[in-house]
Picture 1 (tube, helix red, strand yellow):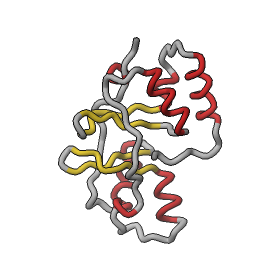
Picture 2 (cartoon, rainbow, N blue to C red):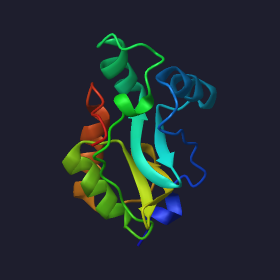
Picture 3 (spheres, one colour):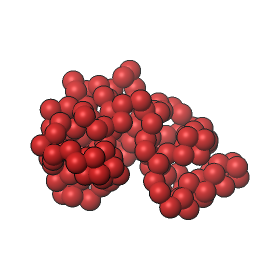
Length: 144
């Protein structure tokens, strides 16, 4: 049985609550990523996606100098490193999310994405089907 700790990205780049939306967007561009966890004192405070920037900043006419905490998603679904890939796949399918922060004792220790699960040999056919449906969805759902 494969656990999230076996497939997660461990060295996750983060930003802090005091960073501006512009700074986070530039960080995303530098790293070529669409999500950045927001961390304070090693604790996961929220997550911001490129979609959050478009919908909650640009579309709402927020200035790029606004603080990231104004638009980040705070009520997150997370998993622990010992969560099985099947459990994570079911959660992602049920909640229609593409990325899960991996948290241990309240601290961010990694992140797992839909693609990480899709390339693994997940034996649960229901999980495979659900992941397939998420990846075919035209609009990315916000991380909750």
